[in-house]
Length: 390
Image (cartoon, rainbow, N blue to C red):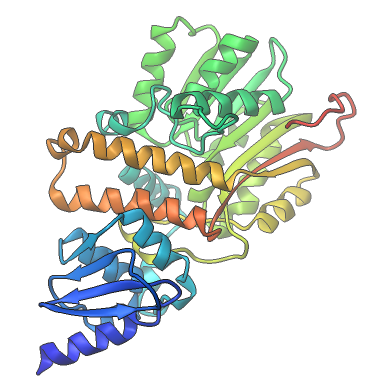
């Protein structure tokens, strides 16, 4: 009786995702949702209690997939594109999940959160990222660009927007494995400093600097952005790619203040970040398993904070569809190297990571999140070229 009630409740809950047709299968029974020929089937090995779906639809479905209690017959990305395109129908009990959704923004806790994602192993990331080790949105200038070429395009594009000149100083906040600064040093002969909280990224970037003989040009430090003002350093240019998402909503102004304090008057700042149309605390499953403490800013929040520090916005560009394509490239690479990843992690992790890459691709496709680049100057700079950057 209990199993029958759980089945009925689960099917009823999922039947509201009826914008496009799909099939539910459970213990030999099939249910058609939506009108038309279903494009995929969600095969449930066990019922999900409605109470779990109401507490967090994303956690309930996500964990069921991770545990093998759900199998998708058809393309996983297409199935997620279907569900995430109707994310307004998801349920989240913000009271029950308060501690998960709102975590501490202390230096200690944020360092722990960052390393929990980025320090799972450089060898793992090398399996599915391209040779540049760029873990952010690529820029596909041409339809036939490879992922590698698109990542090179992205870095070239950012460096062009920054209007670099030989001898300038460039700070990269959240420098990753260092490709942007390496390219800046090689092509513009700038003096670059990268900061990160990831020990794995720090070690790999240091190795790259030494291997390419760039010790006179580049340095990398394990540093929290909040410690920049007390470092005593100032810079002609500052860039931050995919880092502000780890700062936390209450610290956006503090982040911008920190940039302002180390950027010279008239200096140029490029902020590249995942954004949202409106302010939102974030998805519960992503926070629990992928990016603990991660919060996606709205574009207007960052523009507002920039203005408070007398930053003048020169250009705003949305690269949302470029990130959809980037993630689909990563997901393809990941599946091609799944056997190597299986030697590193268990099946639950492998399914979780596939779900993460495919789900993120779907959220960009549906405009749930965007990717913006904001180019700005600290105060007025009338010496920059009067050109479009694209």
